[in-house]
Every structure is written in structure tokens, then in C-alpha cells.
Length: 128
Image (cartoon, rainbow, N blue to C red; front, side, top):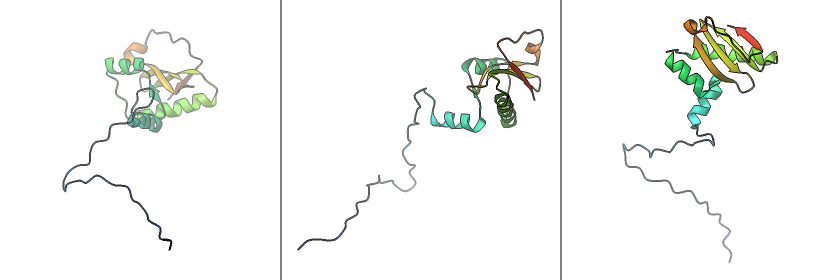
């Protein structure tokens, strides 16, 4: 006689004691060393910041909120539609030089540092 029954195997799950938190999972890193959360945040905001830009924002005490990030992303989209490569974005007494192709903010300046400066290597400007 042959056994025609089908047996389903279920994976073994670790046993947790009541009230015990699940074990922490290590954050997955991308080849560039960014965590999944950093990549997700970048995708949600639409733009990323170079290390140089992050240093400038920090040293000049420039704070950007979600609304500002949405405006920057919209400005980058407009510049991309016109075929821009490197653009100057002027917004709320703030100047950002952005690589449109990479959607990366290269540097940032506040109102005090904008005056008497020459912006080079840009092919467009977006005023928000």
C-alpha cells in the first residue's frame, strides 16, 4: 500500500516568553553603507545631501523641515524638466547648489553668506 497523504511542514519559529520583546534585527546596509531607513528617507524626500552640504547646513545652523524638502524636490523636478544639469535654488533666504541628474544638494548657504558670492558651474536657477 502506498501512502497518498500530503504532509505540510511549517517553519520553526523561535519561542518567546510572554512580555519579552522580539530579538533586534541588524539593520541591512546597502553597498554604499547606508541603512535601509536612510535610503527610504531619501526616496521619500526626493533629494539627498552630500557630506559637504550636510556640514554646511550644520555649521550654519540651517534647519529644513518636510515642507522645505518638498519645495527643494519640486524645484529639482522643474529644473530637470528644462534639461538642467547643475542648478542654483534660491528659497527663503537660502541658496542651494544642486546636481539635478543625481538629485543631490552639493552645498548650502544662508542669507548672510549669499551676498557678494559668485556661483559657478551652474546652468540654471530656480527661485522658490
